[in-house]
Length: 238
View (cartoon, rainbow, N blue to C red):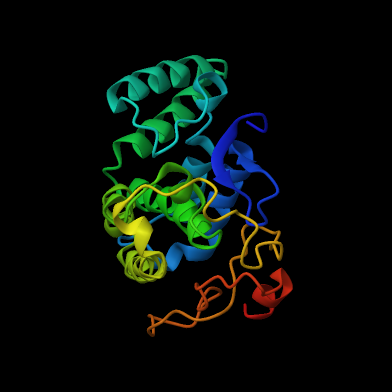
């Protein structure tokens, strides 16, 4: 998975992320953001799903959300890959891991819906903090962001979606030409706006503030994920 390159960049714009990094970051997101799940979730199972959900990309590669691909064809190819790859394991592990992967894909349980929400939340967060990221590259509009990210995040983590709506609206309001028209891929380089202050340790689960009070003070009461914070600062808030 380290060799599978995704469309999303690192926050410093130095390169694109790979699928192994993406999966690990999502597991960390589940560990930190578990309190924002819509339902009662088993965080260990959610983390397992997120670590396994893109294993199929070993065979089929990454399919960008803005790529205009056939969802049915993608599902067929990924199902075949899951059967082959998990089939390399002893029967007990094969059945367990394939079952978790299929549960994630169906997105019917609370665990799977929260995992799906985080899988949409992470690239949205990256684009907000890289001046548009893949939205700028692909000429994505405000309406497309809402339709492609909103349903999954809102279903699995509605409080996170409330914050995302605010971020996205603010982003496109500052770039009115991006709201309805295609953008030049060169319009907003990843490294602009201080992007070189990349936070390592997992896209910086930072420590600023939510823009409204939430259920309790938490490790991410900051979820504005301010890029200038150091990772150590996030730990001091625990």
